[in-house]
Image 1 (cartoon, helix red, strand yellow):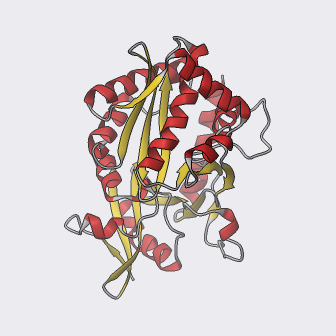
Image 2 (cartoon, rainbow, N blue to C red; image 1 turned 90 degrees about the vertical axis):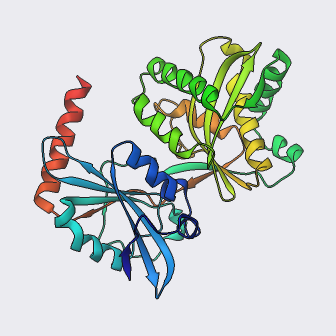
Length: 328
């Protein structure tokens, strides 16, 4: 049975069945703090909670319609889809986008006839996951030779890494992050979003690691640690001393930090497939992440559960038109 989970429910009990940070209780609070409406849905067997689905609602500009988004969840069940149909009118839903945290290899023989492959995924279909359960020496030996070289170079140059998971550290991260997305012409979230997320998740699953040279911050990462897995979520770097390879050392120290905090795996949060083209816009960061010895993992991908077909068609038409205009 699917039920709406009230705000008075136990966050600890809720999180006990969650598999990914973007389905946690605190992530729901974080999204609320950014002005997004949320709903926590639970699949119960009797009184026992079996699965949860955190859904966020995103209004389509200039309309009263909403898109529902359920990121990094369990597989949607038939009962969940029926429940979403029931509440669709109340929440003015035209469709719900699912991006489950499920490997594609584990979805064989499953029927997704009620879902349509999404034309506009938010997560990449692939990610790189490192096994960090090995000892430090073996973990280092598994890195690409160029990555090992760059890490050693950064250390010889005097680069060092510290955790600074406080307001000072966040301010450094924010500064480097926005300098990076402006430099790379990357479309990221705004400062308001990142600030509200940080305020909600700090001292919980959030950690800021910073690479310094001579007390000058050269790179900063915002990491999540949830249960036994670490996640590289956001990162930024300075254009100073770029030949000191601070980001290489920072990622290596991020793996060690996650390991020290009880993790046995580390998720790089997204990549191209293993056979990626070097001309792809994402080739640079995929090559960087690949250097840390992880495996390319294909996730099941992004699917839309369509509730209002005519409006869904018009929405996708408008989306294509917008993309076409932005290219020019």
